[in-house]
Image (tube, rainbow, N blue to C red; front, side, top):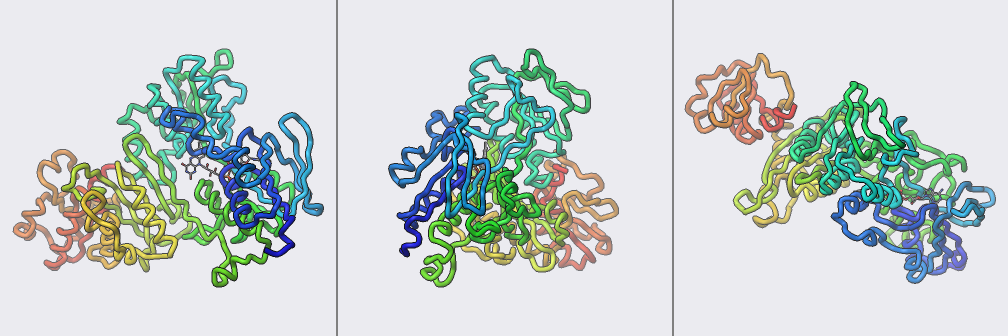
Length: 561
Ligand code: FAD
């Protein structure tokens, strides 16, 4: 290694996901550098994603959340860690940071390279009273400890979770696990904003099935207190929800104050602007994690994506680049390609009791906002061969570009197998693939693991059929009045979930009875999930019907509208 790097001083601000990854990567590629982590909290490298699960006792030991200690960082990596050290300013001219310790002492530290990974902070809505005894947010280990202490101190029969995002739903699940009666209050008309409304309905149904009282489109007017303890939540509608404990999880904002004060550029989405090596517009200052904006892999636009995966990968990229200097030897070693961040598609997943929900890339809402001409296909199917014991139903929705089938995103909800499907689709998105590419993937199969035609293939086939008009799909919530609706479900299925105005011809009678239908009328075929309706649509097309479409996702999805 060149001598110029021997005394490279790398200072990292924030010692959890991005910061810890940056520090250890920097050490692995540069044994000589002086590496220091400054962390304002009491610990570094803790598993913030695991906090809800200790709250409910599923992760039994608190220690398990402490992934690595300051001692380990020093003993194994010779990385100096200073906890309770908050950095308050950056002097870019002198390459010097200054700050304050937990005991109120000030400190200064020079740097050659500075890596910022200060994360994000939870949004505090106006009704949030910081001095309340039983109103909490869950963002740090200390937050979790406060909540647990409160649960120990006073009996909690009823809890209210405000916000139905990922963290909110994890908290709901874990409070129910503790035997607490939980109410969920969400301002939007649906839970899990990362999903489109009909997919989110499946999760809402699971919450209700588990006994959670779900209030949607419900904003909070105020909290009522007795002795600094909230005793009820008053909604704008006037309804009052009695409660012993409140946990608020209504979103996060990037912690960019330090970067803004230092004059670093903030991008259009509110995160620090960085290049592919995670350098800010000051080449000696890097930024990673929740505080930055990444290039979105589908939109090719800068976007904030506050998730642990990108933060860890970005930390690794920044650590290597900072530690190797700006002329990376990796560049030569890897055939001219420098280690770079690449794009992020926001792949996310959450378990909600017996269901899993997740998304990757763009959903319909995001496509509309970006004015993309898109189409969707939704399928339902068993997560592995239906005849093999334990098969569980999975709903998979693909979003793709209308003119060429380029995959734009996907959502999955089911009792098993969602993670695998989302990850495969995230991979296709990474490579800019189409639904046609998805249909051609050679995936592992044996009955306990998947299906010879995996749900991924099935969703791709449906999308391709839609694009080639073999037949076209019609949106699950489309107005069907005036159309000839042909319902090919069995009489028993129709009795359970009737569809007004439909002509009912069970699929196995269609070849015999199709002449009862008017071939000139625009027709839509319907069944439970779209599979039998597809067969029916193909048959009617083959008989010369003028226009036949298949209801996307069938009645199983339409009934969610
Ligand atoms: P963080 O990991 O938050 O680290 C930032 C650190 O910087 C903090 O420790 C902070 O104290 C410190 N800091 C801030 N300012 C200063 C300063 N001025 N001086 C010194 N130190 C400072 N993501 C997922 O992908 N999947 C999940 O399942 C998931 N679950 C989550 C559950 C919970 C309860 C929480 C809170 C988050 C979860 N996340 C999850 C989000 C994920 O944890 C974050 O995206 C990730 O930690 C961001 O990494 P980061 O390095 O940017 O910030």
